[in-house]
Length: 174
Length: 174
DNA sequence: CATACTGATTGTAATATGCAACCGCTTTTT
DNA sequence: AAAAAGCGGTTGCATATTACAATCAGTATG
Image (cartoon, rainbow over all chains, first blue to last red; front, side, top):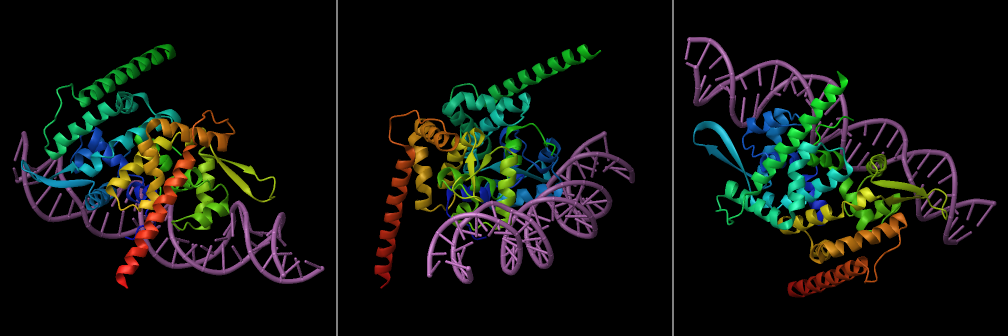
């Protein structure tokens, strides 16, 4: 396909400007869902199988993902991020930080973004290094606690708080 | 419309995940095109009038833009950015920086993004303050050179270099 | 041997996008 | 005063994309 223009924003829009690409990259990146079924069943937004198949195909074609067979399961494909998609992390974090400020995001689902946004460039770089380890097989070059552990912890705290608030809310109703 | 989920990335995708919204915001933001015809005629990507009308309508409805009549021209509408869209600047810059690295961007059209990305958070904040002055009527709170001047200059330098290279290229062909 | 899981494909309906022509009104030019 | 150009769109039609539901053949598992 011919590009509409050579403007960075336009090319980024042409590559990612649809209703699913960024959401799927998020699932692989932050949810560590790396197979068709894993993405499908954990999709908060309820993607259909044909759309998922089509999107995965185009993300492969555009170099955002690579596919490899699972040695333990003959027709399972494991998808991996590439440097191209890992390099999107700062942009996704910036976009998420904006969304937290201006859109009705839920506290639990915002927790990962909040941690990474507040952690600044250093934490984001460490998270990207972690992704490079998981998806590209590059050794993790830090001694520090892994960002993914911080993210998981923050998510669980936010989830517990949400449940507690829910219980209190129900108690008031009763 | 009901949101698919409360995840920041998903909500951002629902708001901006189409082929035109970000490109139009770019035109208003970096190109200072603020009327229907100005956007239409300066659109590098060649948007159609019905699409432009539909997008402007939805950007208004979602609070990315506001509309005001032009006192000097009875049926001209002037569109302004809102704090919501101005706050997108860091995300757009991060996305553009990614695109410059991984997509075939043109040097001239990349110049604005390069300046703002290399200028860091300080320059980005100053640029946002400039947008707040232009679109929200807030006084520009800095003494420093306006970021828009730096951007314009970088664009013109890049354009001149591109033309020079073009001339050299033609000379070689002859 | 039955059941469920794997990554899909197919059919159909709804929605979005792209293209070109057209519209009523206003401002500028001749 | 008449014509031309500019203004923000709308309308109709063709094509492309997306959504939803059902289905499929090839593994693995109990």
